[in-house]
Amino acid sequence: SQQGEEDPQALSIQEGENATMNCSYKTSINNLQWYRQNSGRGLVHLILIRSNEREKHSGRLRVTLDTSKKSSSLLITASRAADTASYFCATFPNNDMRFGAGTRLTVKP
Amino acid sequence: DTEVTQTPKHLVMGMTNKKSLKCEQHMGHRAMYWYKQKAKKPPELMFVYSYEKLSINESVPSRFSPECPNSSLLNLHLHALQPEDSALYLCASSQIAGSNQPQHFGDGTRLSIL
Image 1 (cartoon, rainbow over the protein chains, first blue to last red):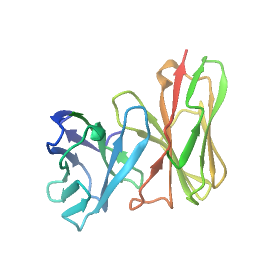
Image 2: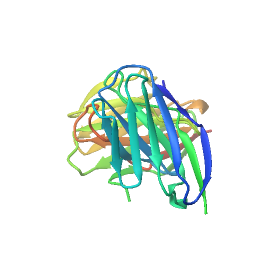
Image 3: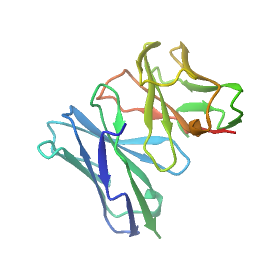
Image 4: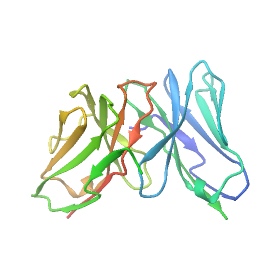
């Protein structure tokens, strides 16, 4: 079963624009992870943010975490066509990974 | 290229067939996972192996039978599947089981049940 929800479910932007995806979860966490899945491929780990961190950066990715609101956001800056993919947040409510519903991002060249 | 290799990439089988999905990693990881993913849905955890022992079984029907012959290999034996079992089956691994461990995924086996 899913741990949380993500919004938007789908996002379409132009190349060069920023993309923001949000994730909400239900239980307390030690950390939260974000993954990317290109069509027909497996998931790729992007970034892990710990519960005592509020923001983390990796290249063009910026992740924030608000444990009081049980939510996280993933910002992709200066998007590229190659960023077109589904993005999932993941938590571990019972020592096993649960994914959010995911956001399908389309970046138009 | 992924570091977790899954075979076959595609599999079509009848409901009475027996087949196996295979997964292999050579990263020295001691935790391995099976997930099931339906179209436009997130992956759902099926099984977790930690140090070659089954540690989590998410109430998966017995027609799915996992096996971990050694620390590098993970199999999923299939028997008497139903049409609703058609999905993408993903294998993943991590250094050890735990919430602070990124998981490395294979590209999956796309299974179709006739």
